[in-house]
Length: 168
Image (cartoon, rainbow, N blue to C red):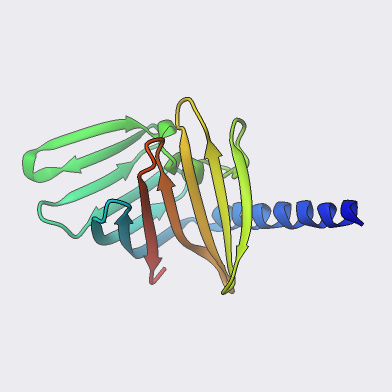
């Protein structure tokens, strides 16, 4: 009986991950407003535009202005008021997991955990304990319709930042 339950559990896990990977594979462009909240209490809002694969622009409604812009290789942090652009290798950020083509939510060296939440939410947590890109990315999908609703990034220091999408 236990083997049957474990088999169903593994199948449900694989189905949820496959469904999420397929959702990303079918996205060519995406636009949304977002709200961002960090564990230390800061909050921000803005607009997100994604063109898969590899391209995303996150523009914050803030003074001074701030934008995050991705390329196939870099994540650029643009601060135009001070004429400063800081670049990070995209592979060292959790965004690489959802911008690559094809998207794999079970990457080598990571642990993937699927949780079904109340209210029709599927949560997929992708963990890496150490090394380059260590931390956790949690993706939340609504089940009807199945689409990305929120992501949370937790760095190795335990700082969490949640981004909730609206008007997708």
